[in-house]
Amino acid sequence: MGRYAANLGQGIANLRHVIGADTFILHGDAVGGAKAFRARVEQEACDRAIWPVRLEFTSLGDRATLLGAASLVQSEFLHRSAD
Image (cartoon, rainbow, N blue to C red):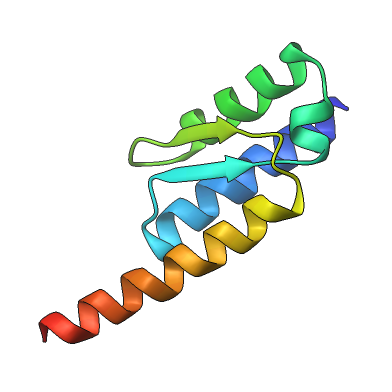
């Protein structure tokens, strides 16, 4: 579990650098794991990212994925409309 948490935290830090998002909403295994697991993921992400990272844990399941995708589409639409 320790290696899984470390890899997940590293992946979140990488995404922070590549796409610039500062908040990540995790669900599924990350939420179902123990508090120590969630704390390790958060610690790894924060230690490895150059900029601040915020993690939120939700029990929405697959709905979290759909809401995240919808928010990306909406954000892109709003940015293009402003140009």
